[in-house]
Length: 437
Ligand code: HGY
Ligand code: MN
Ligand code: MN
Image (cartoon, rainbow, N blue to C red; front, side, top):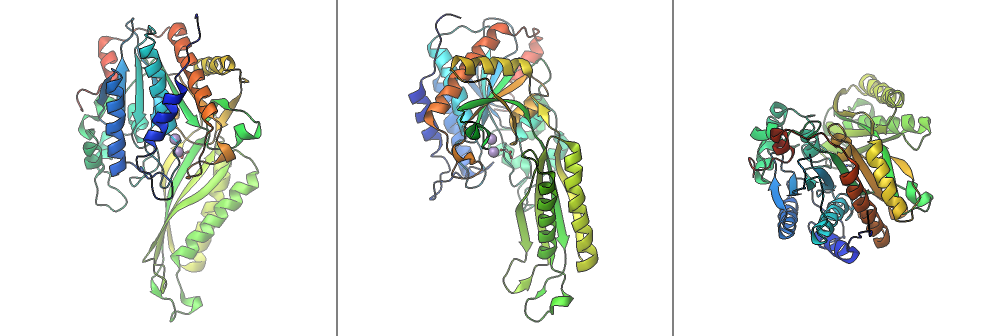
């Protein structure tokens, strides 16, 4: 391949700092949830940056952002990127780092005038994180056909007041044109995503980077408990139907179930709760919680869910409450593509790093992209193992290493992939933003 091409590390880190100013709160965390003002602002910033680089930019029907350059052959594009939204009070790296690494790789290829056979595209996905619409990895789920237009058109946020259709429209998408954003096998030659690991696997082994072999399964369920609101002082303890206590017992049972599996690859969390009326002198009349269970193994999932049902049943009979359970997400573990992984491992080796692979216990857009295109991920060590909190941190040298390894992988795949030539219509669909922008 001749002389090794490297990214501009200083520019990459500067751009990452600049992106971290969007939605930064007084505590240093990032508030950049789907459809917030900070989401709108960062989108404009990203598109402007890509346009300045000379990319053809656009927003597709679900408001994913794209920046594309042509290749020398009529092939499907190699796509790389991540997401720009963040969890509440989140870190500066989750999603943002992958978008900026992708941007830097593209910029390096452009300014070094490296010819590529495939068209290349950078992408920043819509609503990767859970949000007020209870939809995570929304942008990539739409691309791979996991969500139906009719279901999305009827969706509102948790308050019931904001329609998803309007939120997407404000960001430049259009739910009515959703079918145009849909991609199929062959539309994309390969998808690559860089991400902070969000856990401690790399740190425990004192490694800078690793390649993902697969992405854990994620199961989410909304639990609604309906009891009875009443006076906190005058209602005797034996006369209550306390919805919060019932929900708490379910949360505790969830933990017991996951602990009994005794595996780093089985986790269970109730991270969202909402009480009504939520006042110090009123017994909670209703309580809503969302549970999140992660495992690659269906037996583990059923085992933990058994604890949930048992606790729900006890609450019904002992506390006289109603417990409703509604599945929000049941996503099975997703192995990623071995060929793309090999290219990433070659990139890591070129950086002098051991060729290590791991299972991701975090969910990612790449799990959806793998359904339609060979996909791979490179992880950057998370110092202290922090993720989804403002303490997220990656060392600059590790970030630059990941970028260089991924650049290597993109260029290797560009040479080695023999993607079938798509029909012209499919090529257009692969990054079809015109209709929506
Ligand atoms: O929830 C997840 O694992 C992802 O970071 N959105
Ligand atoms: Mn995340
Ligand atoms: Mn992420």
